[in-house]
Image (cartoon, rainbow, N blue to C red; front, side, top):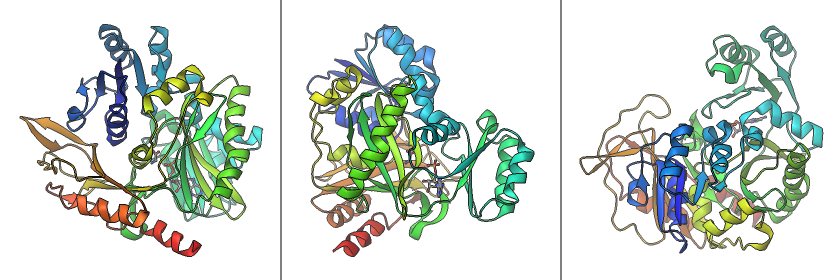
Length: 426
Ligand code: AMP
Ligand code: GLY
């Protein structure tokens, strides 16, 4: 079967490498893909948001199945358009992708259906938002309603900072129309857990849990980034908490979406905070996380393509979804200066073959004259898996030493917080 995968980052590389293990798949196209993905799929250069071109490509190349991975095309309705011309897709339609596309929608959904989340207020009028901040509890969290390249969340430690965030979103429109409505919510505390799930709208199967490391520097210092590394499983996510999340959060969410006539099919990502009052939803994403996917999919033992087809066809309850009992660690190698200014165009040298039990997922790189050159902030992720977390971490860092490019920068403490949590448990 001929498959196309929309997207071109490390997450998509991980999806593509996993799909390649499926015996049913003969060809994989990436739209647009990247210089590293080109090793594993035919890269087309068609942008992930260019829905008319994506649809044309599917038609002209007799595509049998499409995986829409990033938030933008999902929220823009790529799945709706592809399904219209008869291409089955993995991913929610536009109606359901709103669970990520609008924070106001997701907060109102949780309130209406009693799903635990931070308390919040919605504002469309800047003066009212500013007045509210005169008395709101501090710290507080200001969120742009729409997609904002992962930057639309400001944790404000002071009233002035919160007001500045409101002004930049509503007056200066730094996130465009995404900031014309905002949410101001209660600041929650506790360990964070990412849980990606497969759901066909009736059955929901959680994948192995994971832990992201969002800050740029060691010890969780520096600016927020798209994610500098991940580990799976997340030690804070015990079986007991998993059960509670299933009962109070996961199943109520898919039922709520059904009740709203917005049945969600695809990967529903729960960003959770384990507060002293129990697990609460920080955010929903309508897609696989990046770089969570880079530790979750290597631990998947079942056929990803079969699962994706079952999700699309409402057959998930009859399909095996099995994860290994091991651990995985992904270290992101970025360009120095990320997430602010950085240089591009440096040659990347990769170990060939990859050391046993490790995978390199390329995110920001392009091929030029046969050379792989850096072309983004997050350049690639090095994932290693092993029987236990400690050896997965060591193995990942051993492999990192075999990757070279000028100005490479990475955190040296990915997984350390998780290791400490394991020790506390014992
Ligand atoms: P996002 O960009 O939506 O992934 O959110 C970025 C990060 O902001 C999350 O991973 C949390 O660490 C943090 N965050 C979001 N909402 C809250 C909240 N209500 N309380 C505390 N931290 C939050
Ligand atoms: N790693 C967080 C996200 O994908 O949104």
